[in-house]
Length: 503
Image 1 (cartoon, rainbow, N blue to C red):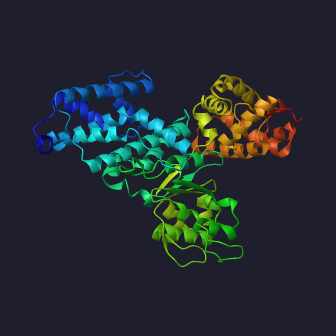
Image 2 (tube, rainbow, N blue to C red; image 1 turned 120 degrees about the vertical axis):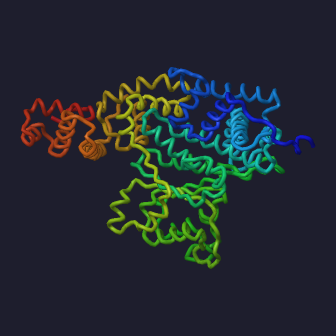
Image 3 (tube, rainbow, N blue to C red; image 1 turned 60 degrees about the horizontal axis):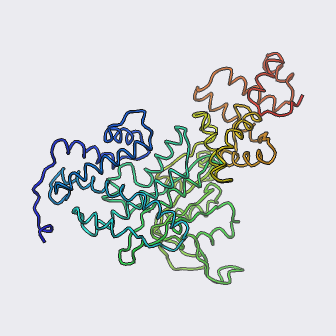
């Protein structure tokens, strides 16, 4: 009874206030940002040479040590503070409890993946909730924070593990995906938006094979899911609340049924009622509409109505059903050109683009960071063979580089790389996609010219290769460029995939 009626009597010391204020700022900073790294260095007192993993471990340990000191002195209950000190202590308590249970959350995520769509019991939930309530957080808020902890851990798990890469463009992608889930200021999310994100649609752009599906899944599996304390589990499984649908695989006559469902007898062959993806999506779920650039104008209009009105009717029905989920869409098609040509509606585009995220090409990633190829090949081999697969990565990369040369454009991106690894294992060679290489080389040449990111020798080599792919002989390329045959051959061999000389 004393605890419930205690009056605010404490103030943080200047030293504690400075330290814990830094912790509070770190807690609200995107974990994939440079700013978060700098905050962690300040908290841990670590040098620049300390690795990211070690830095995180030291940061968590340092905060835990300082929080234990507050608890030992009876100063860790936020109800004994007012104003800014109260907010600082609240945030630090949340930071500390979240990180103390991070491994339990990780193990639970893996267990839920194995269990599938049936929500699992959360054995450590009572300990987390009790810890939050003991330090002055109300029971309703404690349940909400527990659900946000779970959401944060899922987002970190799926973004970190599904979208690996050393290139700066991949750092940017991970940062953007985190902001897409929690907004650019997590205080806004915590205070106002945690249960209102369904109106924030997302449009993923990028070439085929770059990993737009993995990016969509990372967003879709990271939504807020309430905790049901009475049942001891979250209200649904994150494996169920993300529904991917490739729109290009359905003929026009069946697409609307798959999207919106249909009533029995609505058309020939409709022998029973069918639920579409919008009806199957749970209140906290997401629908991933892949290949959105392939849908017709009539379908675009109906999707626009759902996004605006949040209601829809099954084909052949009149009931208005409500859609409470979130929409993620993706395409590799040039939407700007399609809008100019009237193939993609402007109003539909503007309703989709609450956030636009571009997934970088493999060509860009390798250009930014040469070690990117080894890292990706190691990951592919590990998934294919097991942990021992990493030991083969260097050999496979050497063979692929030998066959393709240093400037292969990887038109098929990561998807092509996966097949290149498989083909190399089978035959010890991969000579690439020559048709894709031509198209990719042309695109890369245009990008290099527009951005001014390459030198004249590289541009000339690419131009000679394009001419050779079109005309077939070194002599014709030499005639058109004014270069001698030996110089032309040197440039073409510098750029083109290795293989039998056609001349």
